[in-house]
Image (cartoon, rainbow over all chains, first blue to last red; front, side):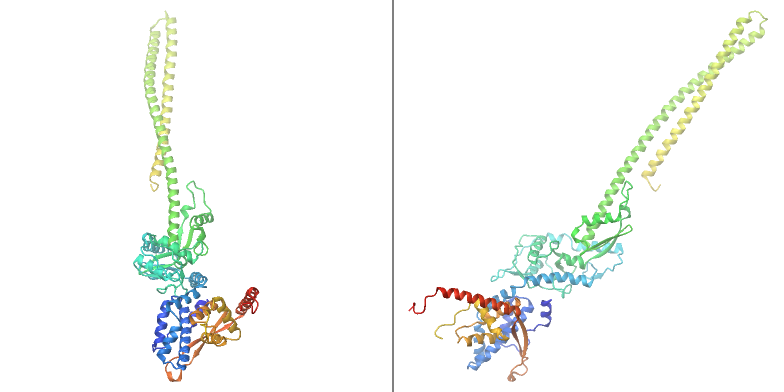
Length: 456
Length: 122
């Protein structure tokens, strides 16, 4: 806060429109200073006061104005040396301020409550919180395409410039190096006041990491070290259509949060039919996707069977991937169950078909038996008629043997009739069994059809 | 002024500046003139040492700055004038001064103990 207030209300430099030698010397000196603009402005004003007061004093002793100016400036010593002294004095307490600024950035964007989608043409379009899933999802994929892997694949070819006096480099130089690497403008979001507005340069110094030969991701990791970010935070570069944006990942997480509704009704019932508690489901998602992220930088909740996620598009990519994988797992489990079911029906059909074949063979045998029985009955009946006829012709003699023969013939006829009746019964029974088995086959066949084509 | 003014160490420079400011607020050029005048030009605090020191003291919260508009000379009408930065010792600065004075006295007393008595060197 101190830093901002001083910058806003602090003195402005170079108020004089007439540029005299002192102004010109101060211009050069300030360029050598390379300290934050607010510090530079105050140092310039103080040195100007010193020089002009000193020139006045020297002129009183009889020097001409040009001589006095030369003497006064000369007394300051080597310009670059002087700049170096100031730089180390300013630097002595700078780093904590810089961290405050970075933390402030994130805070400011949260306060503004911005929910924004970056569209490919680089404009910030309000997403609203209505969460029309398809629209938000479309925007998500666009951002992912615009800010995906290819950026990180590039390798730094330039070293960071190091100040020979201090051995430090500035973040502005690091940003320049990233610009060279990406061959594009980089918008660096650092100061809360300027976040999102333009091409901000940070003046802070830090010991330069060696970036040569590193990918952008590795380089950003190293650059983040002196910034002393939160352990869960990192520096990130995203494409915004017209330029690249550099800031902390938490800044992007908050600024570019998008609300998407995921219908997870299909995932809340496991393939076996077991119902899954919606809150358990949500907790699982949280534990599987950057657990430290939720709460501050992203939000998640369940309403009935809808999973609501407000987060950066990169998180939505992970959520979609996770839900997709769960759905695929469920689908494969369901497919395995279906396959087992189908195989069971096929084997039942085969078993019953064999049974039908056997019964039909039995039926053919019974038909032969029946034919034999019918023939035996006809023969028996013929014998009975024939003996009865003989008995009618007989005149009382020799009838004993005839009567005996008739009794035997009638017994045979009775047995033959019983055999025909039995065989007929067995045939009826076998036919009935065949019908029943065929019904079972048809039932399994209809199950099979239903499994193959659920709509049918 | 037979000998050139000795170069002040950072430690001594801070002690001097804090001591002068303890008497009342002042600004850079006035501080350097005051130190030169009071030491009969024996001590000089050059601008290249003074102003970075003041920046450091300010960053450490030992002095509080304030700004004054200096009107331009009558002969330079149209010139907008300049700004003067005044420094005032604050509570933290007074505490630091007390510590420095105490440390300085103890140090010189220690050194004094080793010095030969007057006349012994001649």
